[in-house]
Length: 451
Image (cartoon, rainbow, N blue to C red; front, side, top):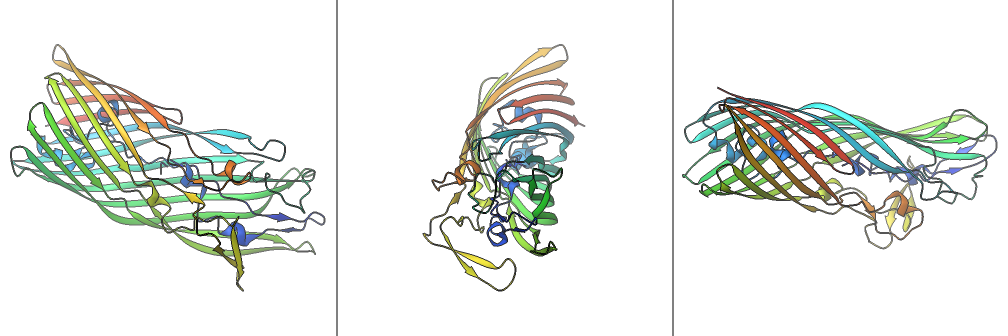
C-alpha cells in the first residue's frame, strides 16, 4: 500500500439547510470514486524483500545470489550450490499527509501514521547442476491506512450551504494485501550466462471504506451522506523473467522484467438522501474496477574491485500509470452532464479532451556497498546504500483553487539504508537492515539456512 497510497476523492455535495434536508449530488461524487483514496498512498514493495538487499539500497539485480533470487532475479538461482531455506520479517511505518482544509484554512493538512509488521518473504531453493528451482511466498503489498479529516471538502463553494451551521468531513480506512506465490526455475546454458523465470499466482484481499459526512454544529454526531465500501478478493497469474551475465569474477550484469497482476474489485456505493418530509432514502449501486499492479523493468551492474568489497547499481523503471489506465480521469470541472434515468442519474462527457488527473511512470536509481569483515569463524558484512523515490502520486493538471489542494503534486524522496550481517561457515546467515525516508521507515530481519 504502496500498493504508495494517497488518493482523495472529490466530494460534490449540495446541502439544503432547514428540516435537515440534504440533497447530495450523487452523480458528481459517483464518478470520482473510480479514483479511490487508497491509490494515492499505497506502498508497493518493489524492493527486494531480504534485509541484505535492502541494506544495499535495493541494488541487487546483478547480484541475486541468495534465496530471494526467485523474486529479485530468478536467473541468479544458478549461483547457489546448496539447498537453502530463508525467512524474512519486516516492520514498517507509513506516514502520509491528507488535505483537511476549510473555508478559513484552505491549505490545512493533517499527518497520519500507520504501522504494519509481517513475514515478508519465505523461500526454499534446490540447485541441481546447471538447474535450480525455488518455491517462495512474497508479500507484495501489506498496507493499512486510516484517517479522518473533519474539514474535508469545505473549500468548495456551496451556495445553499451555511458554513456557520454545517461542516463536511471524510473518514477513510484501507487494508490491502497482495501475496505472490512463486515457482521459479533457472538454467545456466553457458559458464557466463544464466536465465530464469518465475511463475506467480497472486492473491488480493482488498478492504476499503470511505464515508462522506455532514455535521450540524449543534449536534454531537455526524450524519453519513455518501459512502463507498469494498470487500473484494481475487486471484491472478503473472510472470517474472530474469537474466544474469557474469563474464568476469569482478563484474556482473542483470536484467529483470516483472509483470504486475490485474485484479478485479467491486465497490458498493450508497447515496443517503433526506426528502422534504424528513424521510431517509438510501440509493445503492455496485461499481466494478480494475486494480492493476504496475509492471517493473530493472537493470543492474555489480563490481567487485576486491574480494571483500562489492559495489552495485540498479536502474528500476516502474509503470505507475498502469494504476489508472481504464479509469475516468476527467474531473467534471469542465465536463458536460448527460441525464440518464437510473442511479447515479447522469454520466459525464469531457469537454476539452484533456486528462485532468495524471500519474507518471518513474525511474528509480539504487546504489549499494557491501564490505565483508572476518571475526574468527564469523564473516560480518556491513552494507550501506540509498535510492531515489520520485513522486508517483496522482495529481491534477487543472489550475483550480479547489482541486489543487485535493490532488497536489507529490515530492521526490531519497531513501537511506544500512545493514549488518553475520555468516557462520556459509551455513547460517543472519541479516538486519533499516530503510528510512520522509514518509516510510522500515526494519528488516532475514535468516538463511543452508544444508
